[in-house]
Amino acid sequence: MVMVAIVCVAFLASCGKSAKEGENASGESKDSKAMTTETTEKAEAQDKTESAGEDVDAPEGLSVIVNSWKKTPITVSPKGAKVNIQDFAQAFCDQYASYEPNQKMLKYLANPKTYNKEAEVYGVISDIPNGYISSSLWTEIDRFTKMCYWNRKNGHSLVGVFMINGSENADPESAFMFYDYDPKTNIMTPDLDVYQVVEKVALNKDFEDYALELPQKGKDIIVKLYSDNGEDGYDITEMTLKWTGDTFTLVAQ
Image (cartoon, rainbow, N blue to C red; front, side):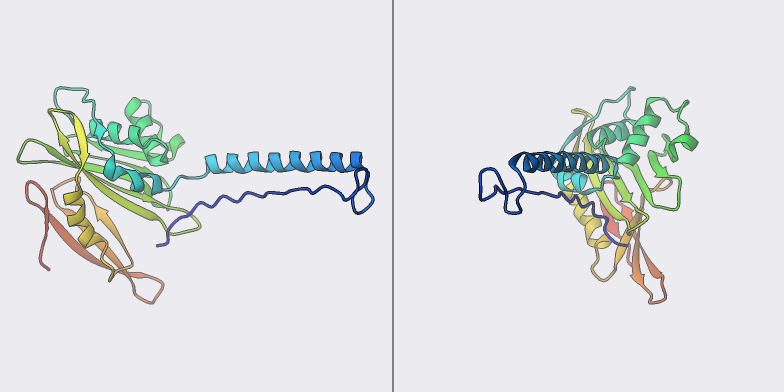
């Protein structure tokens, strides 16, 4: 899998003055030179506008989220007496609403009964009893946001997020994050301790890539580690991170 990068190229042009006041070096008149310059500037302005439009429409990567989540607490607004996975998803996707899978999640949460997965080309699985939700693109490209939560022994909740941003022209980029939710403050605080536990397993340099299976059923995380088998494919090694009631521990193979 390869990282997706969105590159913006701007073309800048400049026009110099002629050696003579009324003519340029090739004998053009001053008025002719001015008209040419004006036409060029208009064309360049149009190119820049079109380029900007392409940037807005292009799929946004995960870099903004990856670069900010560790220092960005999120406030949750439970709709009922007890917080659930939809409340966590609403808060997280509101915070990072520019990412398309999150936009689709928000559209679903706004009115699940009228959400049209065929028109949106995104399917949403919302399993409130099991504390799991996902928003996934309905094509062969991996493009999704998946979330779940665990109840901690101290009355808090641990919220986990795994995201993949795929592309037809490049391998997908992936990211994961964890938050501690305090029901007294309704704030999700980045949990870097749990993140580091998962990071040690998932970002193993002996493997080329990874994926996390957040549990819809059960409590453990399955980490899939990919290595090139030299035959246009990958060998997959699975690791299990067992839930302890507060964090995770790697199960010996």
